[in-house]
Length: 136
Image 1 (cartoon, one colour):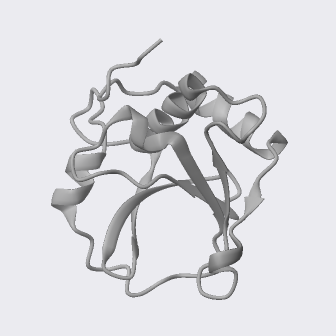
Image 2 (cartoon, rainbow, N blue to C red):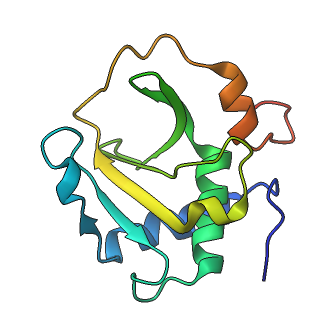
């Protein structure tokens, strides 16, 4: 089932992801072990996750994620309820559902560059507006 790219996720979708994520087998990103330690799940290599699941998780991140920066790049990061971990996907210039075929997870104890210069145009491009007219 292909989901519309800008269809927002609901609270039930958020709960689904926050409950599911800790049960998944995350792969350690060896290439970034020293510079930006994180784990990832990827479509086709993560047992139990279909592409529809990745699309749904991507919608959750785009709906409930918070703006943040990785050096100069602005992205949306979805935090766990205790805010010890965050999830993100790498969205294209024009975000598509398929962009969420790899989801990253990292601890929140590291920050990469100043976080006060958010590119709000990028946030608007990748975020899914809510009924209130603002994201999340």
